[in-house]
Length: 247
Image (cartoon, rainbow, N blue to C red):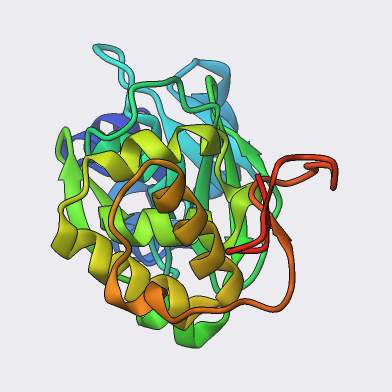
């Protein structure tokens, strides 16, 4: 096999990102490149020919000449060898709960990374303590055959409640929660309260504001500190004394 065959091989394997530091490349390299052929030389040739698009050092999007690779698959593919999950907007759109453009794809990792522009969206790698990352309700699936690790819908909401800056369309959370069953809300409340009091406060505020019945986990919550519903909100925003939330 020659250098020019590599993109087609990756697409047949349904691998969206060619990462020279990945386990997939280490396994495939002996088959894909002749001995002594520098990988960086091949990458430059393929990039110049439009077969690859550089995303960051050592990592390239494999360009599909037929159709655009889903952004969520590219985002997850960038961290294929690292514990992670795609969350908030992109995850909720994947689950059919959000029908808006997703300009920022939040990927939760064990440590924060630099944003990566992938064309049409920016991947924002954020960090989460290992105990929360390992216990997150996320799972492996596929999108158009490409592997993706995505947060379950309840987990995506909990991430948005705990870290409002991780979600672009946070103002749509009331509509998203309206699609949740009572059982889903109860599980979301349990997870939010376990994650942080602030996350539970925001959930209680949103549910009360929309007239939903409070899950058992929130009924006895009496927060002490005030929090903002969204990043950057002024203290002059409407205030809930029950939840101590500036909304």
